[in-house]
Structures are given as C-alpha cells and as structure tokens.
Length: 357
Image 1 (cartoon, helix red, strand yellow):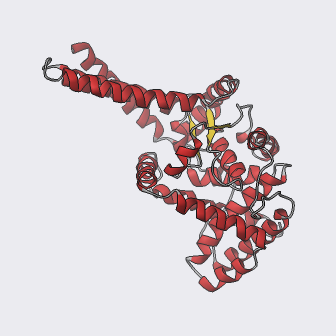
Image 2 (cartoon, one colour):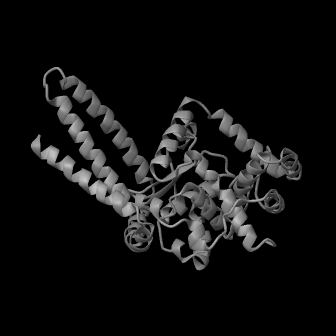
Image 3 (cartoon, one colour):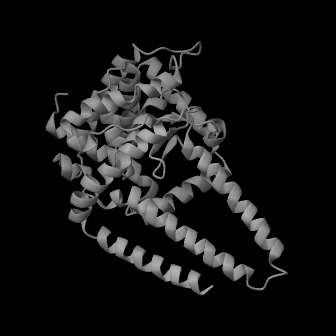
C-alpha cells in the first residue's frame, strides 16, 4: 500500500511539472511540437498503419471490457476484503495518472502550442457580414461546380466508388499542403475505417484520433459526402493540430488541395455548412438567398446529412457530446463543442488574403 501511495505522489508531481511546461506556448511549440512530437508521432503512426485494422478500436474495446470485469471482481471481493476498495481506488488513480502522462507526452501538449492562425500569419479579427456573404457566395459556387463531378446513387445523393480507396487517397492533399505549411509535413499512417462504424453512428462521431497508436480512425457509416473531410480532419490531429476549429480548417485545406474531386467537394461542402450556419445567426434573409442558390445535388447531399443526424440522435449521442464538451474544455478549449465552428474565422482570414479565390 505504501508503494502505491508513493507512486501516486510521484505521478502527481510529474503531472504538475507537465502542466507547468504547458503554460509556456513558446516552449511547447519549439521544443515539443516541432521536435519531440515530430520525432515520436510519424514512426508510431507508420508502424500501426501497417496493420489493416484500427488498433485503436481494438484497444478501446479491450479497455472497456477490462474496466467492467475489474468492477465486477472488486464488487465481488468487497465483502471479503476490507482494504479491497481502497486498493482499487489507488490502482485506478495510478492507471489514470499514467495514461494522462502518456497522453500528454504523445499528443496532448499540442493543445498548448501556437494557434494555427499565428503560425500561418492569418488575421482572425471579427468577420463582417459583407465578408461572410462574399465567402458564402464563393463556397456556394464552388460546391455547385464540384458537385457535377461526383457520383451519386439512385436517390441522387453523393456516393464514393470505394470508401477504403477514398481513405487511401487522403494523404495526397497533405503532401501538397505541406509545401505551403511545413508544420503539416511528415509521413504518417493512412486513415482506417472502424469495424464498429454502424454502432458509433449513434455517438455522433465521424471519427477520432487515438494518440496511443497514432491512428486516424474514421466512421465509414456516415454519409459519403462527409467521409473525405472526416478523414482529413482526423489526419490534421495526427499532424499535431489539436484544436478542433483548426483541425476543421486544416482538413478543409487538405481536401481542396487533394487532386481527387470527391475530397474537394467534401471539404467545400463542410466549410459551406459552417459558413451558412454563421450567416443564419446574423442575417436570415441572406442565409435563405444563399441556400436557394445551391444546386439540387448539393441540396440533396445536405438533406441526406441532416436526416442521417436526426436518425441517429438519441441519449448516447447527447452523452457523447457532453463528454466531448468536458474533454475539450479540460484541454484549453474554453468554448467546448462550439470550438469546431472556429473554422469560420479561419476561412474568413484566408479570404482576406486572397478574396479572388
């Protein structure tokens, strides 16, 4: 018991040291993000990427089973051993402490690095309605143009030829994007589809990045129009972009720079969705005008995404959303789930650099 207490004290001190280090943005950026992370993450990701299945999914299932089996065992011993509960609590604290330290070392410190806007020299001051209108019109035109080139099913909804092949093409956009932003360079493992995708749909997740294996895992049961963007979003996390709004923006950039038009359309469609939502909060007439300018194909895809979300919305998705909100706020994203929409600020900032695009 004494050894466990000493272990808890040691872990606490290490966590405090980690948190103190995280307070210095320059140290995190220059030492951790650009040296330590770039040394650890790519080889880990390539190693796990050699396996066809998502190791992250397997480990999470095993962890959940281990937790429930352990809980049953502890409850069964509770009457026979008076110290069992205390010992279990200490063991749990130790396991959580170790997991947290490894998480921060493998990836979590990226939450405390420089903001992507600062690294890219983008002006993220508040957008005017005129800027949002111009950005929205550009995205509407681009979405309408790209929609012509994608395939659709009998109901007129976008469909990928092969979902796994689509995931294999995801890195092409990052290869081009790295020429503009070297911070996003490096060779990483490919994104993987999840076996439990039909079940995960009810959590509201399109995918997740698992730092312990360096894998970008994708829910392949979501509407096809979302899959390419989801892959690129998780791959942004894989490259050390931790904040959700920034990962959305980087994912969008990699999509539109991908030679595959399915990716270009998916990224444009998701960016358009965020911009339209922002416009709807300011000017409902402008929102209606832009929405009416969407092509029938784009409209069908957006309706399909909306109906999919409504179909899978329930208690589990609400709980998952609340957990994600708490997680984000605990990791330096004070706006929680709303941080995803920060992509709009970054899109406007990019528009200010090249309004003609």
